[in-house]
Amino acid sequence: MKLSNGTEVIVRPYRETDAEEIVRLIRRNFREVNVKDYGEKAMAALSATHDVNWLKGVAEYAHMYVFWNENKIVGVGSISSFWGSLTESILLTVFVLPEFHGQGIGSYIIDTLESDELFLRAERIEIPASITAVEFYRKKGYEYKNGIKELDDEQHYRLEKFRMIQTRA
Image 1 (cartoon, rainbow, N blue to C red):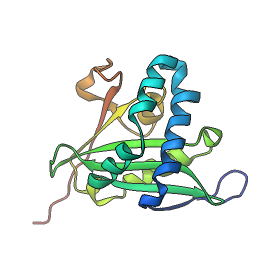
Image 2 (cartoon, one colour):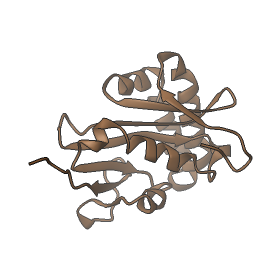
Image 3 (spheres, rainbow, N blue to C red):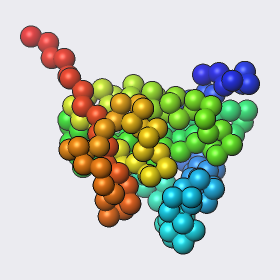
């Protein structure tokens, strides 16, 4: 994918050596972007739990992708089975480096996750959306789960998308 300034963004699978840089990217989003909706105290608490061990744990059960631009990670996204289901999946850890917001990388991340086998086999895909990102996901075709627009216990909106799975006769 090419950015508006002509530079290329390349996607590849996550490697364990990416973990520290990804955690820094996620924490920057908490401190610089999500803080506007959640406040400093909440984002400091979330940053404390989102460390390298947490990220490596997610990578053990999810398909995680890294998005590169000029030798640095500018985005990350992952998809997993939803609680072990073969027909439901969940999008997780979708983040873009703050200075790259609004350049199409978020859409590229979602498009990449939606081409993953865990998306393609699923009838329903869920995403826990931050207040900050809910409208972005709605533009990508995700709607409020069961039509309910309310924050859950983790202060996320639960969004979902349904797919028609074609079966061969």
